[in-house]
Amino acid sequence: MASSVQTLKFFISYSHLDMKYKEKLLTTLKSLELAYSIDVWHDGKILAGGDINREVLKELVCSDIVLLLVTPNFLASWYCMKVELKKSVNRMKKGECIVIPVMFQDCTLDSSLPFYNLNRVPRDGKPICKFKPQLQGCTEATNMIKEMIDKAFPGSRRKSRNSKSKSKELSGRDALFIDLYKEGKLQHIEINQKFISILPGCTKNIIDFNTMMEQALENAVKRFRNEYKNLSGKTVEELEVQELRLFLMDICGYIKKYITDSVGIRVHFRGERKIFCVYGKNSSLIRNRYV
Image 1 (cartoon, rainbow, N blue to C red):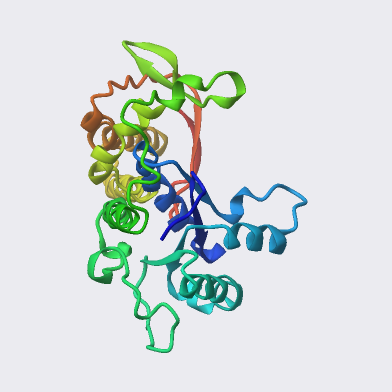
Image 2 (cartoon, rainbow, N blue to C red):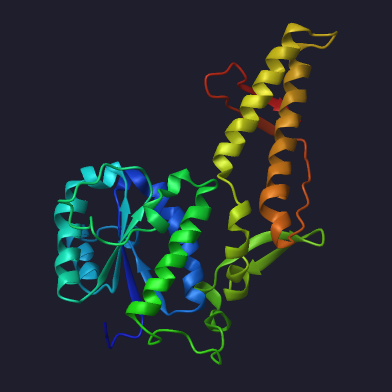
């Protein structure tokens, strides 16, 4: 499949109910930017006041690769199925693009679906939701997409090994930065290609942080309730502060073990006497306390 366009254009078709899946896939697609000149588009890039339907169709008709984020929500979406999918398949039949179904959840797929006979990712169509962590499934899907790129667009969009990183050209408002502690001091670190290149190697250790935090809070609530039965001379307020500290220590431990250790980043956790408001789902541990 030949094209005179230098940049490989991706289009992501998804249901807005699956926004979290789109974000996970975008994270792992970043690794493709190391080897290819790509531009990943989704409707989240439409500016306020923009014509949504016009912008979507404009990007769809010039895309080289269309990624379908397949879930029951996707199959139930009229716009995904009747507009984006239909247009994508018609372009694919003309040889204008390739369409790749990315399986995120178990779905009932019928042979009448336009993408039924297309090769699905991850391998064997195993839904990403069954991977633990899910980012591992996204990484496997991205690796398969890379193989498809090499086959459908042989070498034409690979970055030159001798070319300098474009990150060096970024400056001022074009550059992105993140604040991290390094050697005990808060530093303003640029998110460049070198920074991004370490991310694919640690995806197996990055776990859904929201899930971990909820689990740690549930454990703290259970400990509090057990201790509440046997006060042992302590007041209820003292127990609350104690369990809140243990909860925060759990969160710090998760960050260190699963996220920063694997890439050699040293993180310093510093406590200050501030008010924390902790909300426990379906629990009585809802308090403002000094720690």
